[in-house]
Amino acid sequence: MATPGVEFDTKKPTDRKGIEPTQVKSIKLLTALDNGSKNDGTGKGVQPGMLYGKTYSFKVSAYTNGNPNDLKKIKWKYKYHSLSKNKWIEKSSSKTGDTYSLHLNEKDICGRTLHVMAYINDSENEGYLKIWNHNRFRWFDSKIFLDGLAARKDDPSKIDQHYTSLCGTAALIYFFAQDFKEKFFSAYKEFFRTGEQKINSFKLAPNKSLYEMQPTLANLQYPHYDKYSNGKPIIPHKLMHISDWIILAGTRSSDNHNYEGTKNENWDAINWCDYMVLAIKNLYGASSVEDKTSIITGRNYSSTLIEIQKLYQEGWHILLMIDSDMLDDSVSYLGCVTNYHWISYEGDLIFDEKNKKYQFSYYSYHQLFKSVSFRSKVFNSNFYGFIKFKK
Figure 1 (cartoon, rainbow, N blue to C red):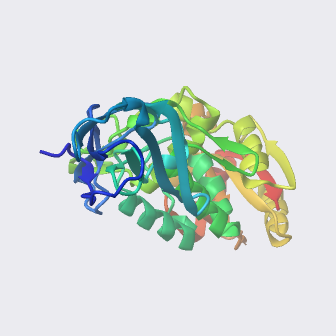
Figure 2: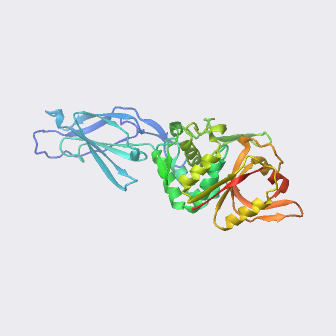
Figure 3: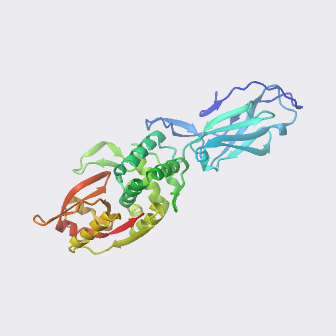
């Protein structure tokens, strides 16, 4: 029986001019394969495959006309089609003999089919195996991920921090996906496949535990909602979309390797101001950025809102730092660091002096909220400044 995840190609014997009257008929993989997503769009199917960082052993299993006189005549090589280079990459081994070990240390092989060949004279018509190599995030269905990534490219407001404290990362990438749609899509597509990627001068290379996360109902560590605001259980749990988790958790963990993208991992996920400024410069690639946040609240911020609206009209992106109590229409002069929340300002400022309200549009939690009104005392007691930046 064939090893799971391996395809055998039947080759015809080739006439030889050398001293060996035989050729390699077949080879087999000795190392067990690991399961990962079948990438069929169901999010449930699994398939065996190779993993980046592991070593795999192969052995010749049969010859066409008996064993060769000299095993050193047996050569090995492999090839794969590179997505990053859009061409076939072929590498021959200096080792000869009837056994071969291959250490998978090339990230570019992830998400590709590896062709392994053992031969005496004709590499294309002797021993040949095709083996799937998992994407780096092996448990995530690539079809679902890419569909979700494309949807967020077309409408960045679909980006959802879900049950995480990744509001700042979401608010920033919301603007990044608006301004650099193709770069956003291609960078995170490659990140999903290889586990690493550079966006401008920001290196995506998260805690390695993220590569083994399983986005399933059975895994209670994966971010999910398990109850409604009234305490009623959500059955089944509502999982964070895998596209959002790869984008947001992968980005935040690349800056803070202590963050592993799990449910209730709030402290390590927090998007501190210095991280936000760094990500704005390095990931977004801003030409100008200024941090105007403060630890003080409770003032009259009407003039600040006028300044923010003017900056917005001049082409600046604005990230507001608030206490999340603002979104619940709650006065809160004593802020809590775990309640700090970033939202993306989208203009439309109006002062309703009669009813003592401010009105503006903003993005947060997978939605563009148009012309939302806040009581002035609610806004003034929950506002902690802003960061402005532009291309």
